[in-house]
Amino acid sequence: MKNNKKIYEGEDAIRSFLLPKNFGMTSIVELPSTLNPFKKDKVRIFVKLVHSAPLGNIKSLPSYVMLSKIPKKKLSKIKNLVEYSSGNTALSLTILSQYFGIDKMHAIITPDVPEHKKKMLRLVGTNLLISHGPACPDVFADEGGVYEAKMLGGKPGWHNLNQYVNPGNIKSSEEYIGKELWHQFGDKLSVFISSIGTAGTITGAGSYLKKKKPGIKVVGAAIKTGYSIPGPRSEEAIPKLGINWKKIVDKVIPIASRPAFEKSLELVRRGLFVGPSTGMQLAATLEVLREYKKRNKLKELKNKDGEIICCFLACDSMAPYLDDYFENLPEKFFPKVKDL
Image (tube, rainbow, N blue to C red; front, side, top):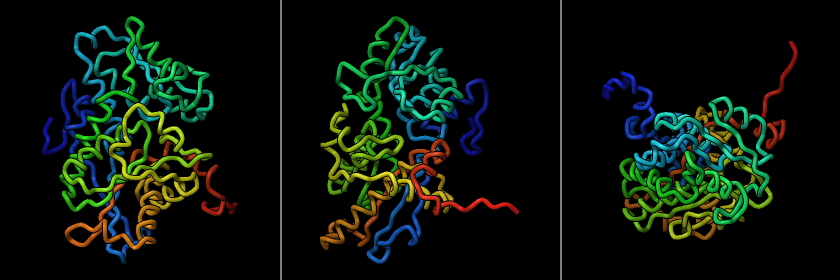
């Protein structure tokens, strides 16, 4: 590979391209005042485009790190990988596992997974296994997809990474999100916002940032009870997670479906092609700022330059969720189709 020209060559060129450390830091973009109603309060809001990494989603990072942590002696015996995931983790593991000599990736999903998500996974070569357990199981329970993946992973020739407790999940976010954010912002960063799915991202990146700047605020976005947003977990499900996010997260903001899709749509139409979980994080960012302003405490967030710098993450694009936008937003949000 020639780093200066971004050329990947040779038999291992694709693997080199997919290696997280080779593609460099992902970009950070500031939002305009049309998306930042707190601009006059010296608030600056940024989004880190993690989805610009290879495979187009944030889960490519922990997927590669988790695979790379499998001991070589054990790796040589694995023919089947299995994980409880219906989204980006399953997709990323399907692609990346072949570069570790693993023949097949099996994703355990529940019957409620939309047809377009099933097609996406089948398109990249994922084998689907349907679990009839709870959709958001307790990761330590003896039922549901997480448990079933662990059981299958114990069979000869099979392996379950279990992203819900795997240390590589946290480690990847320390390295490729937390460390990068510190390099890009330093101690000027005031608030870090992330949605909570497995909690690996917010725990890894948040813990790194808090080591560097203990006073930084780490905010988690969870799905408000009764609503659905692809990817993250609901506010009643996050206490069941296996990663101890509570020691890092200062506040959890529950977000309903409509603001998540609405904010995502606003970003998309300005040229940032991001999904609903990214819109959810923008909605959570604005909610936190509203709360601080209402209590006249915005000044507590100011950095040494007198500014409040907030940064959230773009986890994936809107492409896998096109139907969901039309289901969650009124028709008035979309241009009409007319006959000539």
